[in-house]
Figure (cartoon, rainbow, N blue to C red):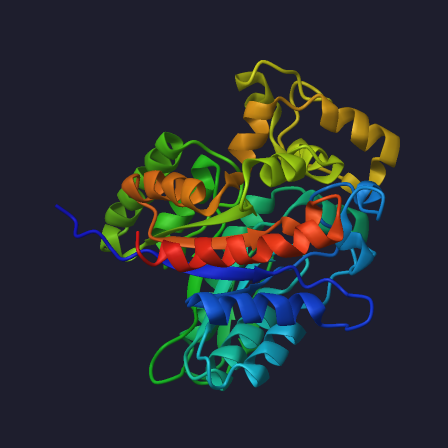
Length: 384
């Protein structure tokens, strides 16, 4: 029987530009991670968010009074460098969750991650995935065959890291190398861990072959999580790897509050309801509803939220079944959320990376008060 690993927690900095203090979201996430004893702090890599920014206003979300533009994301590697400079005493691990192999050449990603790993003395995590349509297609990036591009990007990063500073030539449909040099050394023989955001069958097999950790971000049941983890570990075994060496992580959108009433107010907010559009048509159908974007809509990978106006986003959000919203978000009092995460632990989870969505509460004051509940969740994960 595989020994059960201790569950660890990470805290996500949304990385949004803020009114008054430009790095407010970072300072807030860093403080929560420190006081709650988190293992890591994460930056996101987005140009456009996953929900329609048209509903992000002071009329609907208290957090909009602090961060008025939902799509005003800071560049993540710059933020991680800033975090590294501020994080010398707390020794948090620093991760990107996840960077995208469409917009960034893998040589640049390999350089950024190796730099962070050296400057943090071995505490960098390279979260990586194929990306989503909204961060690629609007910027002229070819969105065809994202998984094939992803697999080649990961192979290119590994090849550069393993080159020992010698010229490397490598054929590739997407990223050919011709006498390429990568001279940044490892830190004490180590490179950043690769944490993969994988969901479909081909991506799951790739995670088994290459990943140090699997970190899915889109909703699934605990049983589905377990089944996908088994697929990853079977692929790892087929590749001659130790299946237990692939850490089982997860990216969770957390709505925590001291009372059920506060939690329900956030769950029923226009922003959270609009967020439900990241669920696939299949997920909506499982809850007895048709997805407003059509019966074949694939979910978060394919959404173009910037094309959805406020009235439409609100109307579509109202169609989302409450049971679907409860599936997408981890919501409740701290004890209730920890019970939900304990079920995930029993299905293999060993690392929870969490985003605090308290700012989605319609009232700023009530939203800010949920931070203490979120901190209790982070602290409690360590005891699971």
